[in-house]
Length: 82
Image (cartoon, rainbow, N blue to C red; front, side, top):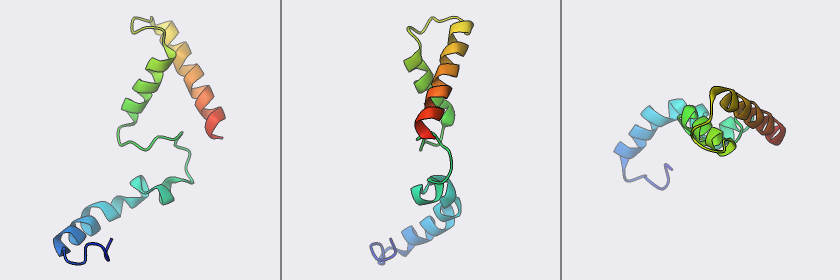
């Protein structure tokens, strides 16, 4: 990036100050060794919500059916990403 933006020191300072201290959270090369079930978003609750909806037949499921769907979802993700 330094080579590409050599003429934009403000951009380089911004990246160095704001994003590089957090690089272990967003940079794939740093997070690939951690179990993340393929999630690369900043709001894990949004990802879980989206995945859970795919396991429900409709949006009007009762709590028992929701818990059951979440358990199945978690088991499949563990199997997929182990």
